[in-house]
Length: 150
Image (cartoon, rainbow, N blue to C red):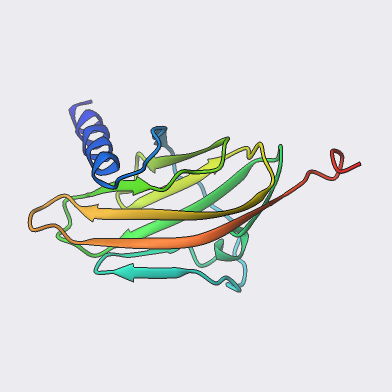
């Protein structure tokens, strides 16, 4: 239980240090997903490498209003003692969630409530000083739900 509280505190400190950040991080349990081709475009920079799982990369760029959305990102690099996570303002209905079982895995998920194109920035900072960081930036396009379009 102490490790969970430490993890949450580290995450909150990282969110505060990242600037304009929304709260909303909770535990997440791992799950398997089907394999698929990576046809995605995104920008990753920094000493810590953040990227989508290869088999799910093509799924992170599109969502629909009122339908569940999930993007799985992993971080590698740093000194191996964990990451503080931060993010830009997420579309209404989406949250950033840590994986409780696997260090370095983070989820952006929920049910988007509004259509539009949203730039999402996810930042990971090594918790050991001197800290290093990495950033992953992508655009999520949320389209209207077909039943709501008419």
